[in-house]
Image (tube, rainbow, N blue to C red; front, side, top):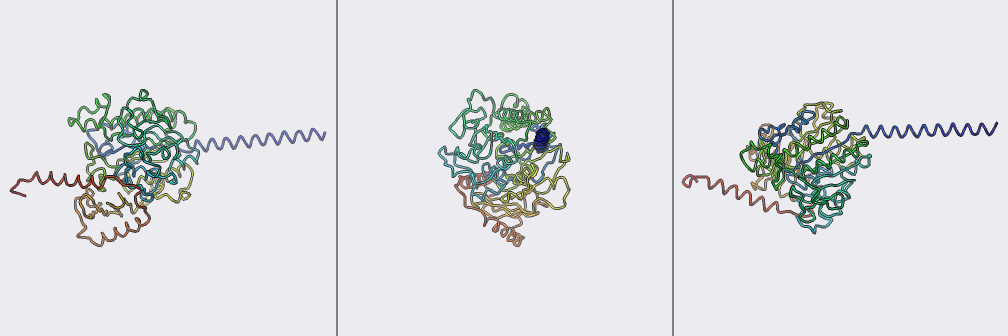
Length: 473
């Protein structure tokens, strides 16, 4: 009898233990399903007015426009730098890139060592989300570390399909290690590639299918519509109504991205993943000087006028965000990191290095306060810089070789310089910048931006001078 009682106790204990294990596993599974999938779609050098949801009338972007209506369009959405590599470094780390000396594009040098780029000690979004159980993928243009030790597989990404450098041709033809398509650490056979915009879309869809049972994070960085200007007949057909040839090809490149995003959304819906997916769309900086349209903003890529740093930017999350919103307070690409990790269940305070804020409460709770009172920009160690504090913006312009002040509430297109009229406001914003800049590092390397700025401004002034009748000069 005693042996029977012992055996019964064992069986009861074993049964209870199995039930507890099963409940834990079920809880973990449900917890994983509760975490939203996250996709960042980043375009390259796309102008503010190169999408219908910001007023484009010539470039057809029906997929992006429909998606933007499903969420929140940021009317004052900024990136942290006016050109490629530093802007991406800020987005991926959630920090002002000047904090770790990433003020410049990397030299286009195949021999760049591991000190040139975003250092491994900087914790990227991918690493924080991996800790939360996410599968992570970097697809497309990388451009924050050329050396293999700084490639996505070393920065928290489980999967990488793309290229390390910039200005890659769209046919995937290799041209040195910076312009070769890799899948993880292996070069991809060019015969496998078609048109990179389509290839990157296809890779993202495959990743979604493979990881549909658990949360995933995809950083999908299209190189369109950056030069060189390459497009397929399908996308050129959609823009043949544009009579200016350069704009027509550029528009076709944008249309290729639009088509790709539509395919992604269709795949998410087919797998019943759409409602609990955060999808963010933005450009890495303002539109390039040629073919892009930044109107009504002044300036273009490389400048700290609004046209260089204010970008097309929206967020969709059907389960959480009310649709068809347009949000006017300032937001920054730096806000994506804390927004994502809090959505995944982790407090942003556990990552004290972050300098953005979680946007979700501002978009769901109708808070009266705004995400930011002040934002900063610095290029090439302070060769030029800008501060936006509430309605005022200070810009030390290297192009114009002077410090400018604008009231953006009254003068959103930056036509009227108030620096001489309001020296006290200039001093106030310069003091804010000095405090912020004291925490920054000198650039770890330099790029030719200063020389290019001087050349561009001289060319502009020469053209303006030639346009005036000799007797009127």
